Image (cartoon, rainbow, N blue to C red):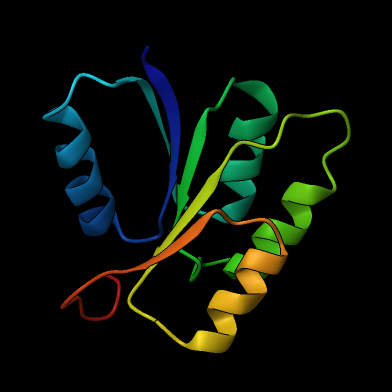
Length: 114
């Protein structure tokens, strides 16, 4: 079974790193890209998405705002959300799980987004 993934990240370099990982496997059928939360939500409303991978530090909203808005989309399936960030604060992790994220991973050794 192949999956449809929505990748949301303001950093094109970091987005390309994740795309490279997926290109080495045969599990992703469609990979949609967004550089802002609003753009990601528009794609989500119009495309069938099986997984969302999101940097919680977006240019127009943070991960908590994104998860809040995601919950308000009426009559829409809620795909699993994986947040990937260089910020590993415990209170952030707890809150994103409360808002429906499935996992929160820390990016090792990354500097600020470019």
